Structure formats: structure tokens, C-alpha cells
Image 1 (cartoon, rainbow over the protein chains, first blue to last red):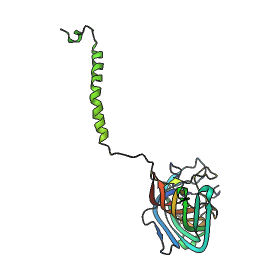
Image 2: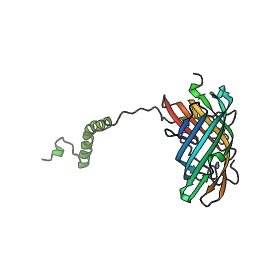
Image 3: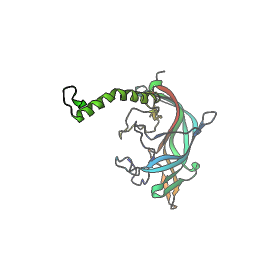
Image 4: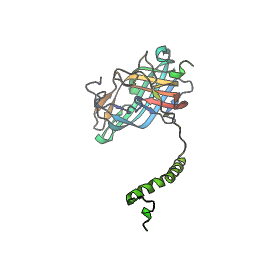
Length: 138
Length: 130
């Protein structure tokens, strides 16, 4: 349920296969520190849609663009999540994550830019390795 | 002498045209075969895009909410690095100078990098859920 004061909701379209708000990351978009403890994801002008009334089925989707940078830093606290019935296993650590973003909706001349990355907060974050599906039992 | 009546059966001009059209067919088929041979050979193994997670969320979508007991990846038949985060909050400024907050309890992001299975073969890729 979207908050009543929500005025924009930007995300990629759901693909015909059902893949949900997932887009490819160009080469170099994700960098991982040598020790594996910091992930930095940076993308520019990602084609998204603005659906202010999401998740209403008749929510109009207006073409938009999103530029963002997101940084995960491991806290070192281990975490393992596994569900054999769903064939997935994740092993990694909890993390802190911050982001900065910029949104443009050209057709309504709307743009918005977040404050710098350091000013954002996130309640839940993890980084690590996962296997699922056909790789779960191998 | 009327050549159309030499076989003893009178034929109209339309019947003759039909016969001519059928007579051309055997010649037309080889031409079409040659055209299809010019096309590059193709496979039919499905697309190389990743498969979604099979399970449905409460909205009937292949979406995975983020949480300490929930699957981090958004793609199936996958092995590799994953990062996941949710419940962001922050503030920004729009074109008019209005201060607008962002983030809700379901504002979640993720990134997946590694091997995944699609088109009947192992693929390599990096994907983000945003």
C-alpha cells in the first residue's frame, strides 16, 4: 500500500517474463572493494516509469529517468538466510547502505534531486553471496 | 483452327488461366526455398534474460520484499554476489525548490552479479532491482 502522501513512484517496468523492476547494470556500474566489504552501484539515466498511484493496476506509467549512486558497507556481522523449500541460500553480512538519486519526468517538467548520499539512512541492508534454483543443490 | 478446342473439350479462358497458375507453382516453390536458405540459421532456446523468482508476493507479482528472513535475489537460477537494502529515508529538492522526502518501508534496492541460467546455458551478468 502506497503512503497517502506519495506523489511519485519511479521504477523500471515489469518485464514480459515477470522479472520485477530489474534492469541490467552496464559494465563498470557495480564496483566491489578488494576486501569485498563495500559495494558501490552507480547508474545514470536509467529508463524508468513514474507511477504515482502504484500499486493500483490502473496506475498510469509516465516515462522518466533515474540517476543514482548507492553504497553498501559491511558491518561484519554474519547473516545466513536459507529456505530449502524455495531452493535458496544466502551467506554474508549485515551492512549499512546510503544512496543519492536524481529523478526526471520530462513530460511534466518535473525533476528532483536528493541531498548528498551521506544524509540518507536505511534500516536494513546485507551483502554477500547467494545460490538459488538449479545452483542450490550443486 | 481454335487451339483451345483441339482436345475435344471446350475450355474457357478462365480455366486456362487457372491451369497456368498451377503449372507455375512447382517453379515458385524452389525460389522460396532458396530465399529461406539465405537467412542465418537460428536456435530456439529462449531468451538470455534471467528468470524471475517463481513465488508471487501479495500483489501477485514476482517481487521479493527485503528482510532478514527473505530471499535477497530477484533472479532465479543464480549464483553470485548480492546486495540488498530497504526502508530508505532522506530528503531532496524538486524543480520548484520544494523540499520532498523520499523513502517508505518498501523502498528497496538490490544488485546481483554472477552466473545465471537462461537460454539453456550459463550466462554472466549484473542486474539491479530498483
